[in-house]
Structures are given as structure tokens and as C-alpha cells.
Image (cartoon, rainbow, N blue to C red):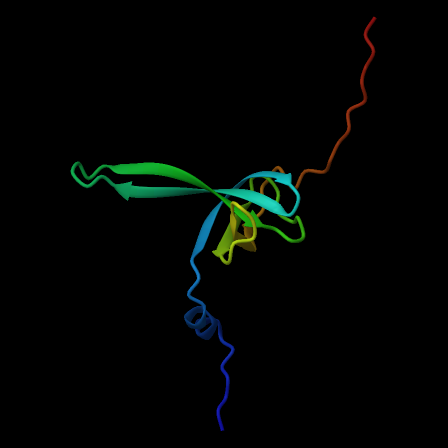
Length: 110
């Protein structure tokens, strides 16, 4: 009799899709977020750490992510011309996202 193990380690071994953690920079499209990943790499000759940024388009089914959130995205099949990633989880909410929407009435000055 075989048993299936549903531990997090077993799921990580079963799924070999690439995952990245980055910052949401745009949510202007429907069900799509733009995530910017910062990569640090040592220069081959000078050994100085160089930062480079790359943007990834990710599918967000519930439109739950907001600008400034730190999210984990997972690689998947192509969903459109640019989308090859999907939102896995929101790691940390932005402090700006926690503020309630406050409308300021226009003040007439004569």
C-alpha cells in the first residue's frame, strides 16, 4: 500500500518551476502585475557586486497585489505575449496599501 506525502518538502521536490521574489511596480492592467526583480552579481574580473533590475509580467487572478507589495511569482506556461509568470503569494504588504482611501474635498479660494 503506497501513501502520498503532502508535506511542503515533498511539494517543493515535485515542482521544479522557477520562483522569484520581487517588488510590484505596476497594477494598471487587468489581472496582470509587473514585478521588478533586483539581481546582484559579482563582476567576473573586478569582483565588485553589480545590481541589475528586470521586470516580469505576472498573472494575478484576483487583482489582490498592490504597488509596493513584495510578492513571490512562479514560472508557468505562456498566458500572453509577455506573461509567463503567475502570482504565488504576497510575502509582505506595502505600508502605503494599508492606508485607507481618503478623499480631500476641493477648497475654493477667492
